[in-house]
Amino acid sequence: MTAVPDPKKRIIVDGVDFASLFQFPRIFRAVTAAMQPPRLVVALLMVVALAAIGRTWDAFTEADISPNGLLAGPMSVEEIQRTQDMLWDALDEYGVPESRLPARTSRLDPRRALAELERWYRTHREGPPPRIRAAIPGQPAGQSGEHAELPPGTIRQRDAEFLETVERIRAAAPMDAFQATIAQVSDCFNDTVQGVIYLRPQRIIEAWRDLFIGLPVELWRQERAFTVVFGIVFILIAAVGGGALCRMAACETAGRERLRVRDAFDFSFTIWPRLVMTLILPLLIAAIVAVVLLLFGLLLAPWLDVIGGPLYGLAVLLGFVLAFMLIGYAVGLPMLLPAVACENCDPVDAQQRAFFYLLNRPLHLLGYAVVALIGLALGYLVVALFASLMLNFTAALVGALTGNSALSGAGGLALFDLAPRSPGEIHENWHNRWAAWTVAFWQRVVIDLVAAYIVSYLFSATTTMYLLMRRVCDGQDIEEIWRPGLAPGTLVPLPRTEVHPASAATPTDEPEDDAATERD
Image (cartoon, rainbow, N blue to C red; front, side, top):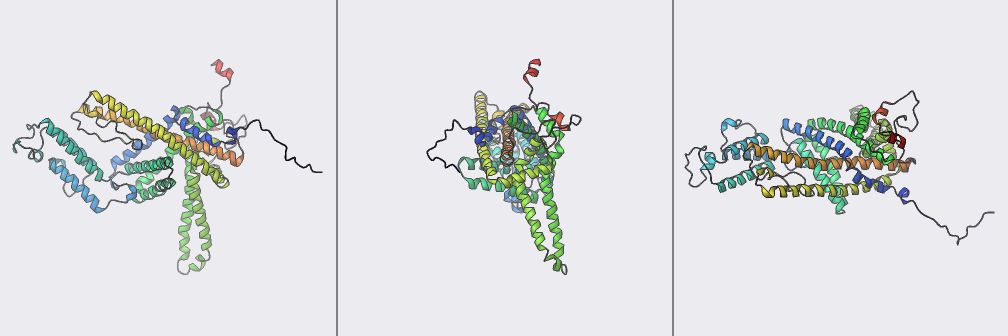
């Protein structure tokens, strides 16, 4: 006989472990964990490597991207001619000799032309060339520029006019490939953070559309060589550096262990082919399907269309596979490297895990992504505010007792505009220029550290997201990750005679016991 439950019976709960019930706040820990010096060092190395390679490319290639940005499309013939006219007018105005310039029929490189113009002006700023001297009242038109001297007030006025001319030309000049890419990424990032702060999801969607669709499409259309070369470099650096950051985040999340920079890089360098292949495998599969679809078009040629028409359903099926791979890759990309870092699995297993978690718990993934996005905005606000105040206060206080032109480009940073400003004065001699360069260098270090924090946070947060998704979908505790001595991709111990190469790459993964610590 079945017992009837008593409606008056009460159940008393002594307590609820909310920490284990609600796991999503773990993602917010990445806000502070990303500031750890070892992670910042790894992320800073990634930022510096990408910047060095990108700027080297810009230095040896011709700028031809619209000053309005990549998404504005290629520069028109009228825009190019307008920039050339501005350059020639400035060179003529400041009297740069024809012997120092290319032929009038050739196209000027704005960077080299402006550098030559600045060198010439700096050399003759106190004894201006005839075209400047003729405009100065009381100056004999035939007097040699080397002996002509201008009043101090006139020199400062001419300096301001010269710098205004240079800035006007730079604003109209074409942008380099890497320069335009960084500008677009910065704009999309700022729009994303502001969309989170001001609760404008439409702004976030538009920023991500421009970043993940508009930017790659325009780069491929306008700068194919740069897209291929820099894309390969980006994947290599993201795989090695990102794998190291994900491993550091996984070890700390799982066991409160902090890897050293060397140990993290040992892990990623040991399995770097696996990390690289994990990032490109879905794209390779999508490329193969795309080629098959291209070849399928041959079946719709005359007389063969009697075969191709009925088989078009197979093409539609392949199109579904292509769309699924691209969409799944775009959404599941944040979990690919963390899967390898946490499981030491192969690329196929990492892709299967990411796609399975996406299809099995899409709302959980969406919720974790929203939490990670909020953490990104909060973390950036704190770091950017600290960096801007630090640099602005330093520039203001140091420059209060000196009139050195080296500080004319220091400070002046805003919360959503951390780009260094152009110097507001002419550096008269070599030691002024050296001081200005070093001041700009130290400011650039701080700004690159902000960028490094963003990189560190992204890999730290996505690693936590992966562990939480694995917990929800597979029921596996977040503290269970691959350790040296286990079979790759599993938690099964290896036989004693069998040691995996990556085992020696993370000697600090296993916590030391108290006795060992005391012996040390």
